[in-house]
Image (cartoon, rainbow, N blue to C red):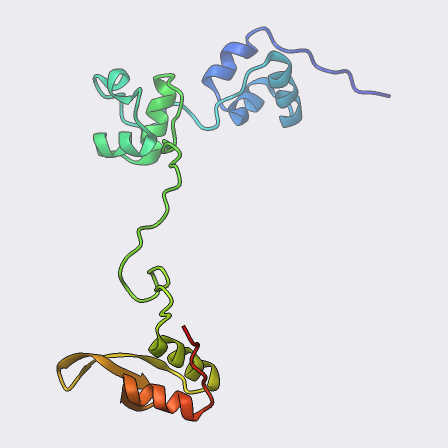
Length: 186
């Protein structure tokens, strides 16, 4: 034999604005599913926690004007209260709760190219005879082959680091020729 369905009490909408679901179950002596069904039929949502408990301080002066555009965290910081107290005040003032403010979407900007190792564009290919000989030695296994900027604190543009050796441009080209490099005729 089916159990008869209870109808919505006349004062349900007003009570839903003032009480939590647990308090409403006790008040109407109804099951939680019954209170949820009544809430869905009436289109209201009971409070999640009491508006005012014994520990909640009274609403501060000028709260409505101040709190309209603030998040819960900002309200709590402004009034030096806890987040729970700020949330209770928002409920007491019937303001929508803004838990966080989303920053506007940023447009993509490519990273700056810095003149540091690993974050710079590849250098232009050296098509000179010395650059071609250096490429040959790199492929031949004499790694690393790179320009040596200073030797003993004196800068020079004619030095190359070939493996562990420091060679002049002429010596590096001679080593490449000895290994089988053929210079391109221009």
